[in-house]
Length: 415
Image 1 (cartoon, rainbow, N blue to C red):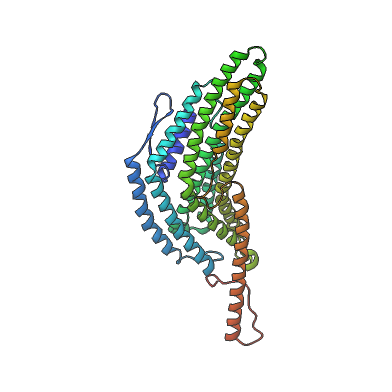
Image 2: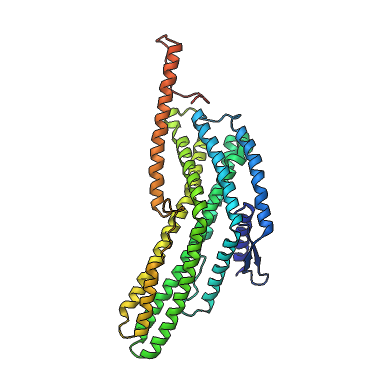
């Protein structure tokens, strides 16, 4: 591994370890920079356990501080939503930290399996080792990191002391959950590129077979069967790793997506509220902060949904490649028999990327989130209008003078 790749790998590993999402230990080769055996880390478990009471104590203080500060378009409804979001987010972060701590052995087994799979590619002539990381992983990582850095700077400029006093309850849970979804997305990208390498191997095998079988039938048959068996074994190993990763993330990703959906609704409501509550407190910095916050909440979910869709498509292409090779095989019985077995195995080896079976994590999730957000925004606006009407009726009762007019702009802390 080049020194730049080694440095990036170490940076990502240490980053996820610091935020409690990668507790297991890993040995890094000093000469090669490649990752060594992954194993259970007692220190990593202790570190994660210590994070829990720290977050509980500082988070409770931050929630209490949320009632003491005023900010533009603050209302009882927004305050209730944000306190609820902060409380639920803190609980979910604690659950995820417990989950990754208790499943260290499973995660270490998956990581070792993926490392062993990569090593087999070096020894297999049937699968040319193409780049297995590519640019998508650093691009996704850097986009999310830059979003957070810009957002935190604007947060401090716009809200000042409020951000500092409430960081542990409002920003930190969102930060951890955001990067947990990104971590899952990065793993899916790694898996997708390995399935693509297998599919490219099948395509090259088909080209090699069609170009040589007319002159060297027996040798070509034996040669092609051996290569096909190598590809089939590699696919079986990668399928098991993918299935284990899907099961490992299924439950915590359900919690993370649920909180993210609530955050998307909250931010969307805060973003559009000035347009029907009055623009007198709206500044360009506040609008930019809301837009960036919405982008930060949407980006990891979008990256995950796209990654799930792409890996599902890549896995389906494996069956297409096998069927294409099967269509050109006419006389070689052994090769044809192995292709039929491979095709049958592909038919029964399906990986469902779901949030614990409640909903799919592919791009249909984005459509569901859009529908849910629109529905809840309509409901929240109806509540806002109803509260305005009730407040107007109350004021008219207290002040029956018909010359008094009601200003529709909600004072801070009254809705």
